[in-house]
Length: 306
Ligand code: MBD
Ligand code: FE
Image 1: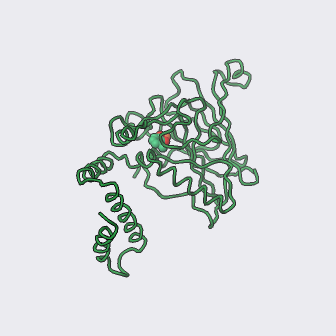
Image 2: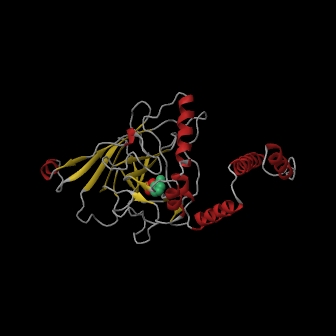
Image 3: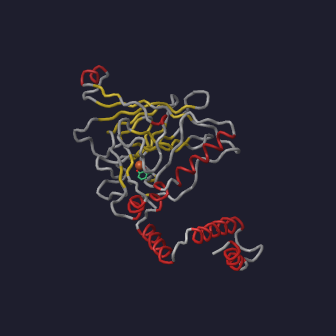
């Protein structure tokens, strides 16, 4: 099908849109994407059978709530980060703490405490404990008081509470408010990697692309503070074989802090009664600024009360 023939169909379809009615932004985006789709169908000679197979796949993605996984696995979510990084650079801003994707597994409303939290609802069953700590800092390196550090990670099976109904509410999800010293600390354990639900639509897409659907071990963060742009980021657990082979493209080299493993003797010298792992990591915040993208995208997120 040649360009003239494709454009004739597009013109027929777009002629139905009444000028001055509807939403101009949605018209612009919808029309552009439809045009690109029609041209792709023509150029690649995508068959009707393939189109309807794709529609079935999209229906399944919706029914199984995997659109967020598809956005992560296709790199769409990462692309949005790269676009914001590029725009920040144009505005002369270089993030000291890189942003990286949120992913689809945040739950709003986790329990809040001051300066310190234990992430597990039930105490650790013999695993090595992790202490992670640091400061929330402004552009001059001063501590920010009243910042909220929201943290979430998966359990030893790679499953996140709420999405895994066998875990209790907000397990491995907490919100830590900083005091005047800007410090936060939490106790938990080193999480493992995550894999897409096997044979689900995202996993099957990854396989069809000759890829895997797994993430290295990581911990998620939202950092918010009045007057500052929300920071969405993660840290990777050093040493995971998938650190630089993440199906969601979230790894950045400044987000792989060293993990120190302290022996029982070293721990005792610090007043702790067990060996533990330790990660130091500071969060550098950027002031809100009209010239750059906001940190909040208002995507729909899970919430236990709603
Ligand atoms: C995750 O834990 C995650 O962080 C992302 C981005 C996608 C799937 C699972
Ligand atoms: Fe995750």
